[in-house]
Image 1 (tube, rainbow, N blue to C red):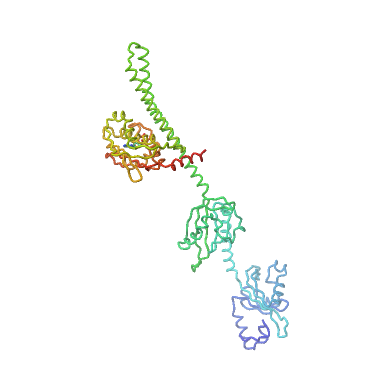
Image 2: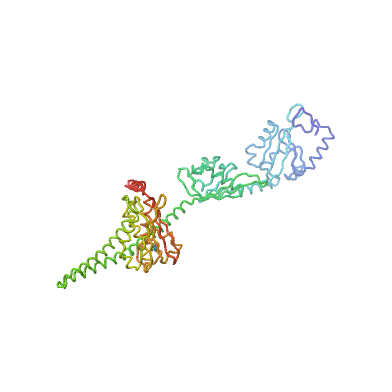
Length: 526
Ligand code: ADP
């Protein structure tokens, strides 16, 4: 529009007449805006059809009226109409959204622009007002605001979940009650701060937080379970879901994060597990006590019977005192007592192992000789089981070990062979390796099913039923410990019905290191 440059908002005085008429027509054709003019005192002096449509007054009704008629009583009371005019005159323009009244008294939401009209002499000649009825938009926005507010209140009230929003760089932008409760921070303490605040130092160092955001960015959502840190430094077990938020155009504008504190559940589970373990331990102990009692009772009863029969001989049949019969009875009772002593020794070993108190008494000896000694000591048992033992030890194998412990290990393996593979050939062998030595016990008995092979070296573990074979399930456990404190190991090769071979591999010289290890553990314990 052709407009002289000397004034700012002068709309009509300098405009050629033809143009003014066109301009008038234009204004009159506008129906969606109320466009009207006021004199410097606020009296209406021009009115367009848009104004009539929006405000309800006809031209005749409104010309000459003060424009405060369009304001609510509160606004009139507060002097707003005058304030607006003054503001427009001072600033050259005034704009606002506010409530206005129609002729029928109903309210509408108005967007208002007021411009002062300045005459060529620089004096204020009035005001032009453009008012738009924005009630529908306002209502829609209000509905949205209400729903957002309701949602905000809802999110804020949730106690059990920390629900927060992050900006694209991972800084906190909202904080709810659950977040306060779980993480311990008040909103002002965390808003704008990086999420890494809640991570453990380890996770911060390894970039867990960035990784999780990256994953969420790529997949839309990411899930994580792990330790997080509260304000007071304590840790909690968090279940985290991170959802990527994008604008309709696909641009990243942040993340929604939902965190659940699973610490209590974790603790409850740990407690349940501990309880279950304790219950199993008690059950195991009860079973063990019952088996041990049976095992101990057998030789005890035997010894008792043998001693009673000897007493009968001495009491009632003094004339039949025969040296050999008494000697045989006593011999028998001693054997039973020997078996008892062995059982008690095994129990003591188990308790020594449990408290790290197995000590080695190292000395130089020939392993083949020790093997023969062990076999010799089990002569009786081998005979009773109808087995035959063949020792293959071609040359002396000299080394440094605990002789009694090595013989004990061998006797354990050999007595198992007699027990589980009666009436069979048992081979015992000793063989020097480069830095190590190896000895083995092979039988042709029932073998051990694959699934039990690992287990049988455990404490109280057995692969047979108590009703078929007596035993505490401790022999292999003790044997493995003996191998290990020497710095060696035990292996088994076995297949059902193909017999079993137990192999002990020891370093040529058990060193003081193993000893030292035991001794140190002991001092630490003390
Ligand atoms: P126990 O003989 O008192 O049961 P061990 O610890 O010596 O305890 O043995 C554990 C289990 O290993 C035995 O119960 C048995 O099932 C199995 N086992 C051990 N030696 C043999 C073997 N030579 N042949 C078959 N099974 C064996």
